[in-house]
Length: 74
Image 1 (spheres, one colour):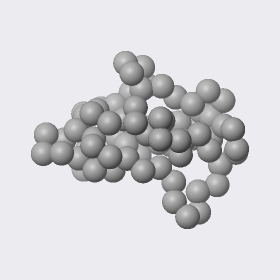
Image 2 (cartoon, one colour):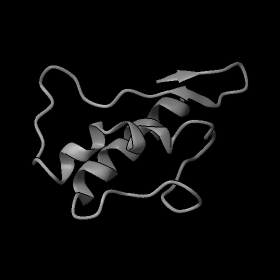
Image 3 (tube, one colour):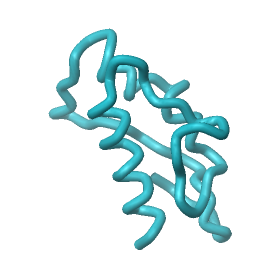
Image 4 (cartoon, one colour):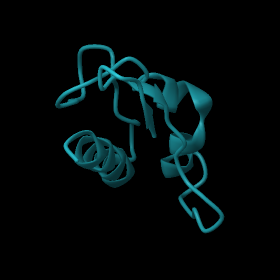
């Protein structure tokens, strides 16, 4: 995740070499459209207001949101 000088998210990459989620559900977290929802966000991010969770992938959606918020508060 990259931030600008004002603390807004300018880039977000989800997953890595060991990323292993259920195809069609949690794997959607790697879709560019999912990550793009977070661009421009700052402060405490929550689902709603332009950022939507992945339907059927509550655990993955929550993990991404938690990681984003942890990074924003450090």
